[in-house]
Every structure is written in structure tokens, then in C-alpha cells.
Image (cartoon, rainbow, N blue to C red; front, top):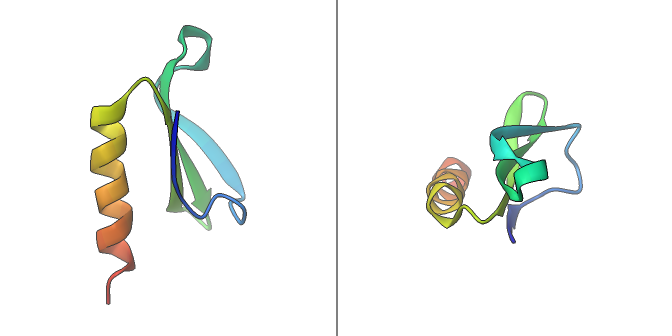
Length: 60
């Protein structure tokens, strides 16, 4: 399981790939429609890409 970003202030959590029932998924934590965090289980490739997007979005 991997987690990145600010998940405590999210107002919405959306599974964007896979299924928690299958124990392979990626979920985005969103605040005001913007992704602020990412949670993944057994999907390191997509997690890595989304984590890099979080980092680049935070840069000025």
C-alpha cells in the first residue's frame, strides 16, 4: 500500500482504477475538485505517475 499527498483535508475519495475488492486499485483524494492525495494498493506504476503529477502541480 502506498500513500502520497494531503489526504486529511480531502472532501471526496474516488477509485480511479481497479477495485478494492480485488485488492488492486488506485484512489484519488480530492478537495474542491483538485487531486490532493493518492492511495494505491498493488499498483505501483500508476501510483508513481500520479505521485509525480502531485509534486509537479505543487511547484510554483
